Amino acid sequence: MDIAHRLKEIEEYVGRLSPVQKILLGTDGSVTQLLESVTGHPVSVRTREQEVVKADTLAAERLNITPGDAVNHRIVELLDAATGEVLVYAESQTPVARLAPEFRDDLMKADIPIGRIIERHHIEARREILTARVTPAKDDVSGIFSICRNEPLLMRQYQIIHGGKPLIFIEEQFPYNKFLDERRVIIRTASRIHVTLLDMNGSLGRVDGGIGIALDDPSILLEAQAVPSLEIHGCNSLTAQRIRDCAERVLAKIHAGSSVSITVREHYPAHTGLGGGSQLALATARACCELYGTAMTTGELARMVGRGGTSGIGTAAFEHGGFIVDGGHRFGPGCAKTGFAPSSASKGVQPPPVLMHHDFPGDWRILLATPSLPEGASGTREIEIFRNCCPVPLDEVRMLCHEVLMRMLPGIAEQDLDQFGTSVNAIQELGFKKVELSFQPRVVPGLLDAMRAAGAAGAGMSSFGPTLYAISDTGIQDIERAAQSYMQEIGGGSTQITSARNSGAAVRIA
Image (tube, rainbow, N blue to C red; front, side):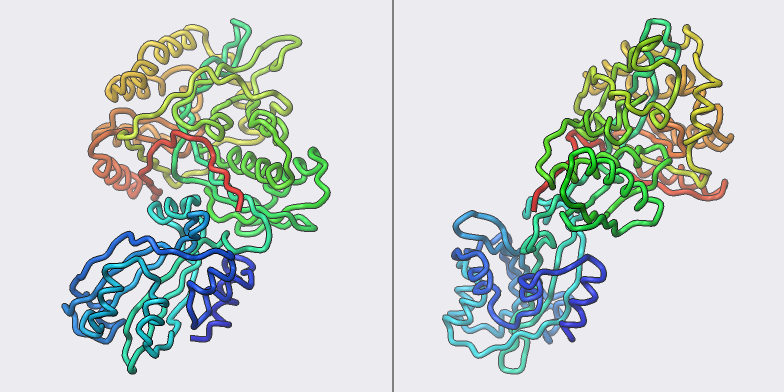
């Protein structure tokens, strides 16, 4: 393999590689010695798995052996012995029959780097690099490195050749945001379900109020670093412009002397009912502040980027996660809100107080179903709906608040799915949620009915849609199949099974 050409391809995909990263991916020498030179500390090995297994077809092909031959399978972490930091995660496969007894004993019984074992036994060998690429970090590996899920990992595979035959196959991984030259901020933040607005009548002197659930997926993952000029990478032009607008506003506010480069590793569309615009704006604002050492509360960030002026669910999801209830805004002459308006038309309004955030039960699964429909109401259309449909009848606000206080909240507190789901279903016919649903095509209530009929304890529409959600503790795949079948008949759509996220945005400095 032409490693120099492959490194250029990796840089085109993930961004600039540091000299150390290039050496670690391209070296045909001892990785352990390189790591000790880079860190200035001894490198130790921690074995995670060690067993002799039968070679499958892929292993047999890699090692030029017969399927079923005995292979030593080993998974280790290479650690900075001084700090305990995991530097590299490595997996190896070795044909047992090709090992001298003393080599086999060291490999299978001791936490010794393979390079040192080869050196100790005076084995003449060479390394042949097979591939190098980028791969997203899954849950297990992200936990090992203490990084965010789906952060990019740099990975390479190579063989150690001895006597003209593969002696060992090795795969090594380390985070892209390790061994870099410059400081970076990495942020992963949740999406959210907006269950409903509580009071769009305002007769008690408060308005808005909201209920929502933070979700672990879909999510937004971005990296930021200080650079001379503002750069946005990894997303379409519309998303890039939204990030640019937020970054410019924040950088001016905090009087940053330079600018930022923001790379979007993962995101989901705005105006689908999952709060993508708010989460992207808050993540951008937080990244800029972290880079330049400016401490701001989530509420201050939200106000700076024009979020939280109606619903506080997105802001609270970013800060706390879980199940959230916010208390809305003071309403009337001289108050924070003087009219009924969405967050996009409520600039400068402080996010509302969070009245409750509670862990959402971990065994309750959530299905997201997004039919192929136009994006939810936004901009001028959303403003007109608020203006024309509010105030909603006071009796419906009272019924809604009664429903939430005496059925939904006890359902969460007691982890009673039937009670909680029944409340979700009832809310779809009350207050401003009924207004939001009234603007949807008939396929939306039909899809809600299909998911309930398939076993969902509760099903509703998030914000103005078009994403719908269903909640269950069992049979979530059956509900997904029912949703997919229904959407196929009405033009298609997408589904995703996820869980609640009971913590706020993950922020990491690399």
